[in-house]
Image 1 (cartoon, helix red, strand yellow):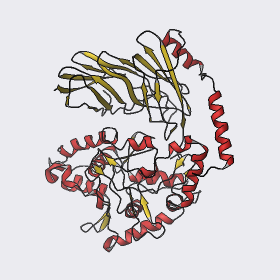
Image 2 (image 1 turned 30 degrees about the horizontal axis):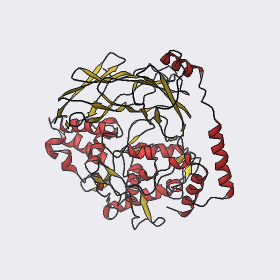
Image 3 (image 1 turned 60 degrees about the horizontal axis):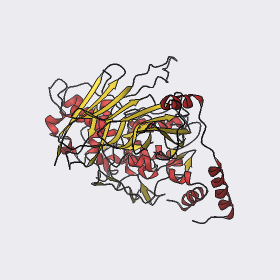
Image 4 (image 1 turned 90 degrees about the vertical axis):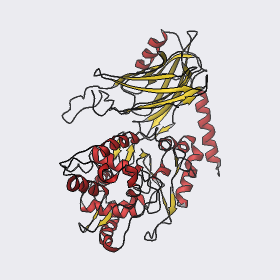
Length: 139
Length: 283
Length: 109
């Protein structure tokens, strides 16, 4: 791959912007649902991995996976949907891991958020932006 | 793929890994269930003057979409293949017969999808697979015809495609089929609609390029019927034709019309050598 | 019962004791979100599968609450660890009161 000086500069700027971003702030409805799930406890970070495509070819079917070792339950929220709720995974005694995958609907480009309740009652959170594209002809 | 298009992709990925992740590995191979090795690139058939290689639409999709076709369980289209298996074995029509009365099992029809549309001597016309199925349903079984792009029909074509997966598309374009094929070729290259676009403008001149946020494919139909993420159901090839023509802002032909049968034969012949993939998964 | 609902599950037929297995489930369902309108502008009422559970010999593996943002034809993949032969019980609960069930036997070797 041949990078021009301009490309390299742009990438460096992009990296700096990403690094400077604070914890994302979500719409009130999403914050409310997180608070309801955690009982108002502010979730920490780390110990939870949310895997979603950076660009979804169609918002109607977006594959996601969440992995939070030791979680009791995990709530998935789509911060930009009309209703942010997506799913809640409650793991039972025979769960072989605390990983779950599903396919979700996203109304447009937005943050997908996962919050896990751990066995000790603490909470951790991860989020990822998914860009939702529309087809070439709308067809 | 054209050098220009490749250069464009490289430039985009240099600027942003986000865009790069949307375009899947161009050297990926499609092996379904770890056992059906699909031919997704093939030398262009001799009749194609403007292209050297034909490529499955699978190659143009994101890695996440591609993954959905690797395994029959992940592929939601296979749900309706199972539905069609039940219909295949169910008696219907006045004769109290099922598909299985004559054809034993769907697997006995392996290879059929690969050669349709096909000249039918008895009827003196090129017939699509849907027409052949309806001939069975009405003339042999004494039933009412299935709607051309309705669920029962699409499911049955998905079943028949599924048992031919991995076999090379090989439609005949000479002999009695030639005039129909030529009609289809003319339609392919005719600009239609307010946008004045022909099939070729997008799928021959610009495959590999982006049309807004969509990665344009060659418009191959070896993967039909297609489970689309957009509507989360199986889509018949004539429904796709209708959508494309509509998107040129033209009055469309009807599914099952002689024009679309001819176009289907011609477009199928552009994929001669690619594997039957249906039901495939696309965006 | 909603029309043409067909559950599918994939579970290995055998497993070594204590080994973790991957389970996949898919069910054909429209998952009408309640956000769409029909041709006359009337909201099409929500009609979704709202809960999915997987149990093994009476013990829970996973219990999922589904919202309308789950795609049509809901798919789940998750893992279970079991130490005895038995039966997985899969249950999907529809807004309309329907319950769809599927069982799979598994042998521990």
